[in-house]
Length: 357
Image (tube, rainbow, N blue to C red; front, top):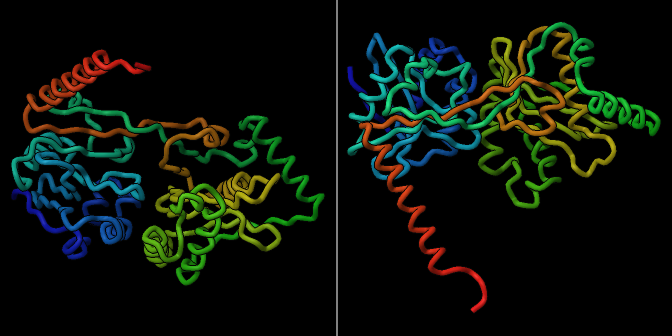
């Protein structure tokens, strides 16, 4: 059976059971669950986003795509989604599946960009794909994770002195000042709305608040995170960590958890709190709890590696994009156009040098 296409906003929920069934056959990643995908579409997709379905029993597939310019498509990729939204169960038929997709997409499609693929959870693992002239792999980011092996004490001894001494010093100073800390773990769906509001208040204390991009209880981002966390909490897969300082929330992580993997979706702390490092204290207390419970084997951050990540882990891997072209001449023509544009720019710059007259 060939590809069929539907308006993603209007029709995804009618096919979400099929999506989840396919996801289970592709690794059952929680960030590709329909509980996560449906709110992404509802809150962030345009009315032009398409749901593609191939019901071929030997190579079933589904994806959400957007047209980015005439002839070129991309997997739907809002910033709130760490992974590109595509599921192909038969990894040995990837090239055939995408070639068929490009022939069937509306209009004359020249290319498809499959974005933000995790090498540990992707249908695009086969090395032979890199040998095709019509397929182009592009590194995206290196992303960190923490694998929980042994005890917390084992893990903590392997961390750098800069981190361990810094945390110990700040805890000691807080104790001397009569400050009490408490880690709170919220899994109750009925408390999620308040948690998101409190999380937004933390973001508002920093640069996101100054730029007007912080999560609030009323804006699209806040409604999205409330939506997914309430539903995941109802299934026992959503949680919010909060660090309380003398009863006040000073740091928070919004998380989801499945099959031994904890994904930290959003992290915020009160930037007005000085000399305490609430985000570091929260991270330490969460990890202590996770090591103790034994329910989680890996913590995923799914973001670009930052300096603070490297204090907590040495584990990183490279995520990537993949460009598929209908014909091998398409990337060659694209490169020629880019080369020509750079040449014209250099000629213009040389003909009109900057400086005084």
